[in-house]
Image (cartoon, rainbow, N blue to C red; front, side, top):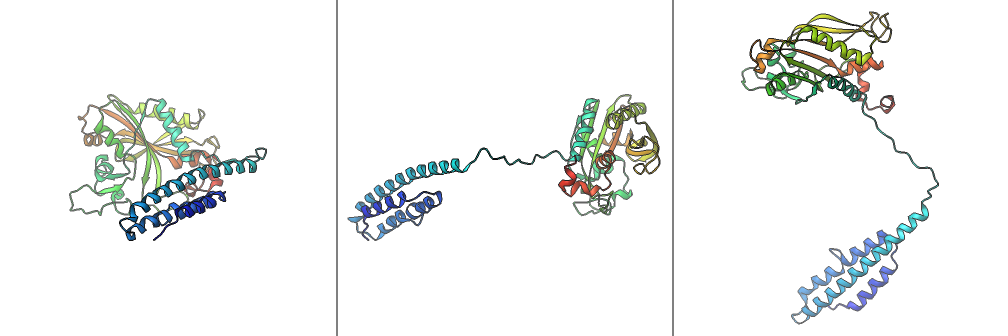
Length: 345
């Protein structure tokens, strides 16, 4: 096949001179320098050329390719310059700018940051743990017996199929942040003081006050001679930092498998100042958290010497506190991503 390289080069020059846009320039590149372009067609034709023609055609093809590539690069710079000039002519700096929306932290994260910040001021350290847990950490080590209702498949998300005859540790989505207590105690020697924020999962039917996923914050302090009065003083200082100095607090006896003695904590309604309103169900009190002294069985599971240490623990629901604090009546609002709701915080 005979190639007229002089004519091809002349045609390429004429085409480039008329190109003024990046789109047309790309079409030129594909036509001449692409995988199926003119240059590749020339190289492909060498297979049909005679032994005498191949060196000559190959040499002329390389010269043609270099010429076209150089012209292409030069025209590319010219086109970019033209587009910049055009953009400057179109841009009117006197026009008002378009503002970009600025996001904020989710209201639940704001509450978590505030609570953790308070406890960090008390000397606590923030710890985290896995959301996929073992039965040992989520139940056994926390003194929750095998026949406890919370261990049933209807109350816990098991990742592995639960088989009573299987000796392996069944995996599950943690139903509380308390398993991190065990992990921290097994990894560290007292004195220790940690606060643990995180997501937890329970197969509850979703309604205005329940969700299958929600947030908890767990607290643990272990040392020698920790007393119940230390627990009460710590909780009172925390709640006054969170709700204001004017609130009052009361402890009600309760039961948790992993603490003994245990208590539920109420604060006087910060909305009606204890007089009674819809938020406190006309009682003047709002339940905010649970707490207690760490059960000896929990220390045993963590490998601590019997009777050497005492400790306090507490836990609270982030959604509940946030709802109480801001007067939110439906937990589903936190997770629907409705900007009309989220922008309020």
